[in-house]
Image (cartoon, rainbow, N blue to C red):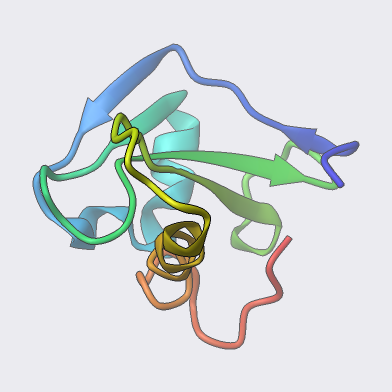
Amino acid sequence: MFKDAYMNFNHIVKVHEYAAIEHRYASHFLARCAAVLCPNNELGIDALFFFTYGDNHLDKKNIGPMLVQFQDDVEITPTMINEIFDNMDPIKLGILPEHSKIP
């Protein structure tokens, strides 16, 4: 799946609004070699790493997101995991545009 994926980051940028992680800004973070730390206590993700696939040219057609949620709750059950993943949907979060082909 990630055979032709390219990811590079050397620092993390903290954003304070989820609007900053919309897909149209993905190439900006990639050009800066930046990963994203999301706003506190918001939505379903805590961090975001963008990558290119197919080749390493910055084009909105070949940029994908890797979403991360940090969990330190030992009480999480397998049934809760499905809800966690549902809350991490990149299209619902606006990270990918509607009708996107998820890489």
